[in-house]
Amino acid sequence: MKHFLTVKDIDSLPQWVAEAIALKQDPYQFKNLGRGKTICLLFFNNSLRTRLSTQKAAIHLGMEVMVMNFGNEGWSLEYEDGLIMDQGTSEHIREAAQVVSQYCDMVAIRAFAGLKDKSKDEAEEVLMGFTQFASVPVVNMESSTAHPLQALADAITLAENKITAKPKVVLSWAPHPKALPHAVANSFVRMIKRQEVDFSITHPEGYELNPEITEGCPVAYDQEKALENADFIYVKNWSSYTHYGQILSKDANWMMTSEKLGNAKFMHCLPVRRNVVVEDVVLDGTQSLVVEQAKNRTFSAQIVLKKLLEEL
Ligand code: CP
Image (cartoon, rainbow, N blue to C red; front, side, top):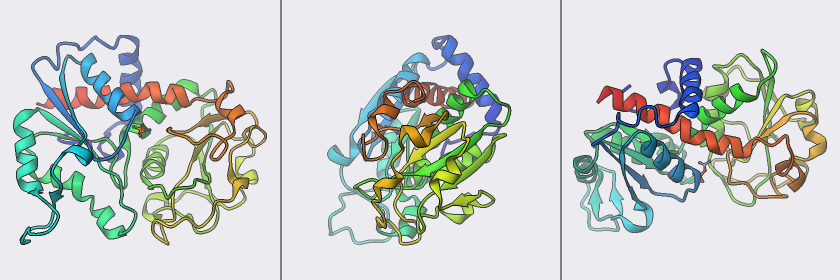
């Protein structure tokens, strides 16, 4: 593996999950692997979990960590070639990616979708710009269309909590006051399609995800019916993909409640808006896995960094 950009870069999901769970038992067992190596984390958007868990993972492996809030503190980057750069952008990705590569042994990037121009978001200009021009491995810490570190943490959490061989897993849309990207849902679907599960998606009409990603996944508009007898309910808001980036519904009836949850385990990537996406009693109850998911972000990052270090 040269870079870690999508769930597709995971060659064997069961093996990576098993290795991550083993790392969790003894996080410092490879503490010399990253000695003398540096990872540079570049954030074009906010973060709590991704920033701290990726740092922690690197520390477990003995790496040095440099973090930059590029979105606030870096020069605004240009990604198009051949432009006369006399407008707002100050530096081209060609120089920036090569320069960053001289300071570190791998670079991790967070750059969300703008949700205005679908083709621009799908081109992943920040992530792919660094991948094209950096001379070191690139790690996706959530891009316009994918959040593979979250999906891998979710796979670890599912493995640790499932009590049946083929659990029923439902991805359920929830309302949100802001238009949110599709990255978490996309990567969750890509990951879950590689699992032995009974999987379906429920959302209001108009919230269909990218059909190339959801191909083969049952979709229901009747949330209560879809959730019946679920073992795991993964709740997430996303904006419309068809009417790109738009909010088509804020229907509070789609909020997750303890009644709808039944006996299922509740999953969400966090951050989550209480009593908008999910009611307090679900988050505070024993069926919520959200804090475990966040803990597993360290070990999903650690298995990825370990595999990249082994290739250096
Ligand atoms: N789940 C997740 O990526 O959290 P942060 O946005 O806080 O990093």
